[in-house]
Amino acid sequence: METVTTRRKYDFDTLIDRKRTNSVKWDFCTCCDGAEDMLPMWVADMDFQAPPEVMEAVLRAAGHGVYGYSEMTDGYYEAIVNWVAARHRWELEPRWLSYSPGVITGMNVAIQTFTAPGDRIIVQSPVYPPFFASVINNGRQVSNNQLVLCDGEYRMDFEQLERVIDDRTRLLLLCSPHNPVGRVWRRDELERLADIALRHDLLVFSDEIHGDLVYQGYQHVPFASLGPEVAERTITGIAPSKTFNIAGLKASVIITPNARLRTAFDQAQERVFGLYTANVFAIAAAEAAYRDGGAWLDQALDYLGNNIDYTYRRLREHIPQVSATQPQGTFLMWLDFSRLGMTQQELRETIFCGARVGLNDGLSFGPGGDQHMRLNIGCPRSMVAEGLSRIAAVL
Ligand SMILES: Cc1ncc(COP(=O)(O)O)c(C=O)c1O
Image (cartoon, rainbow, N blue to C red; front, side, top):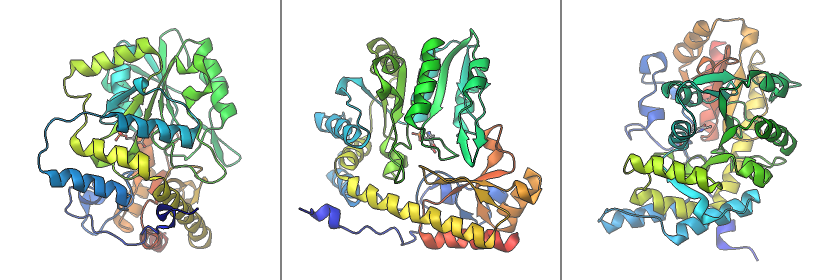
C-alpha cells in the first residue's frame, strides 16, 4: 500500500533566496571579484530545502531552546545502519561508526594517524581539490594516478597505478562516486583496485559522500563491502550532507571495520577534544534524514536526472562547442571547453566575468582539469536554464 510519504510531492522548482544567509555559494563567490549579479553554480551544495522531516527535526531541536552538550543515541546509529543496508547492501555494525564533522576532516585524521610525514599517498585526478590539500598540508607527498578518458567515460588507469606505487606509498584516497567526473565505479573496477591495494599493502580512505546520489541504471558499491580482507584495510567516509543538502550542519560518518585502525582513529579524534561529538542539530537532522528521507531523495534524483538531460539538450542545441561526460552519480557536470581553444585565463574571464556564471575552475581539480569547469546542476531548472543562456550568449 502506498504510504503518505511516497505520495508527497516535494518542491524543487522554487528558487529560494539564499543571499545574505552566510552561504558560501551565494555570499562568498570569488569568481570575477565576487560580482553581485553572479549566478553561483559552483560549491557542491544544492539550492533545495532539506526533506520536510529533516526540517521538522531541526525545528523541534531549535524550539527546545536549551542547546547543551549532546550525544548520539541508538536511534541515530540504527538509522545509519538501516540506510546503508537498504540502499547499498552493506551490513554495518554500529560499533564501526565514528562521528566526524566532515568527510574531509575524517580524511585528514586518517592521513595523520595512518601515514608519516614524507609518505606517499595516491590521488586520482581530476579530483575534489581538498584531496590534494589534505596530503600536502600534512607534509605527505602526492602520487597522482590521473584518470583516463576512454570512449566518453573516465576510467582508472590500473597499469599506471601499479607503476606509481613505491615503498613509501601507504594510502590511496578513493573518490567513489568520483567528483568531478561523475563516475560510479563498477564492482569489477573496484575489485581490480582492491586487488592492487591488497598486493601492495595499501590502506584506502574511500570518500563515498556522493554514494547516495546515483542515477537509474547504476549501483554504488561501497569499497569495503567487497569482502572482509578489503574491509580490514578501508576507512570509509559517508554523510547525509550532500544526499539531503545539509552540509552546513556538519554531520559525517567514518566507518572503520578494523578494530585496530578504528581505535587509533578514535584516539586521534579524542586528542583534539570536541572533534568526536556532534552538535545538537547535526544529530537530529542526520537521524531524521537517514530514517525518513528516502522518498525525498528518490524525487530529488529524478529532478536532478532531468536537469542533466536538460543541460545536455541545451549544450547540444545551443553550445555545441562545450561537451560533458555523462554523470552516473553526483549533481555535478564536468564541462569540456577545449574545443574553444582558449587558455584557462581566457575561459575564466569569459565564463565568470563575461557570462557572470560562477563555476569551479577545472585547474583546481589537478592534472586533467585544464580547459574544464565544473557545473553544479543541484538547483531549480529555471536557474540551470538561466546559467546556460548566459554561457551561450557569451560564446
Ligand atoms: C568528494 C567530496 N568529498 C568531500 C566533500 C566535502 O565533505 P565534508 O564537507 O563532509 O568535508 C565534498 C564536497 O563537495 C566532495 O565532493
